[in-house]
Image (cartoon, rainbow, N blue to C red; front, side, top):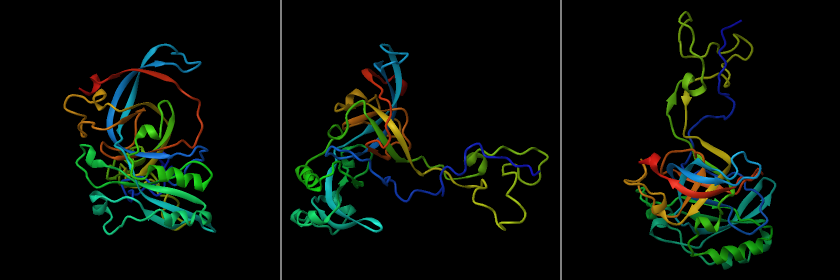
Length: 324
């Protein structure tokens, strides 16, 4: 039998393992929510810290006790609506039948030169023909300290079933700043999409966890033990662990708990600022646990797809000693 070293990490988890096309993650499907509200938000990853909370989860072993939780800080400058899109469902799925731009500023002109502000009446006349209505929002990174002025764009779905009610809801938000607390509440779950930390071109040992071969093995030591049969398929199968791109992939993490949503950046800022990020200057969200990606990277938060048993914590204080 050939000397086969099976990867510890499944090589079929994600395929193809290639670099993401853009730094802002895309949302491929939206959950069904009955209430009429925005179903997502976009912020920037700051770093990690820890908080001291009181466990108020029913049937918990630590109920009533103070515990320490690791949290990720996400800075959430206000977003604004850039355009409104109408979708029509056909044989191949949803397709855009009309897009109207409702906002314009100097930063948007840099990103999308040539766009002009239009009237919403063009959308209102096509509501009876459309099956869905979504909005494209833009961020305001110039309000942060990450050294970036060009806004990031993201299409966000709206909850509810009546398209006319969605239109009236969007109409009330045009020209206004939308904050994180307008979309989410503390102690609710969200799904997080982000682009992971890039690690470049790596070999199979680091990329898939292939075991190092013995000192008496032929040829390479840090390669797979077998590339497959000598006949049959006539080529090397894509399932064989080989070197290639590692990191900078889009990934999603389900059911991340929001510990707190704050409007006072001084509550989380540390002396000298967060490493590789700096000072938080806008409202922020504290997410329990880690979040993919590096500091300053856009993070998309959406309403959850999967139901999970609720956790409850009472925030007592934010422990900044680990970041000093």
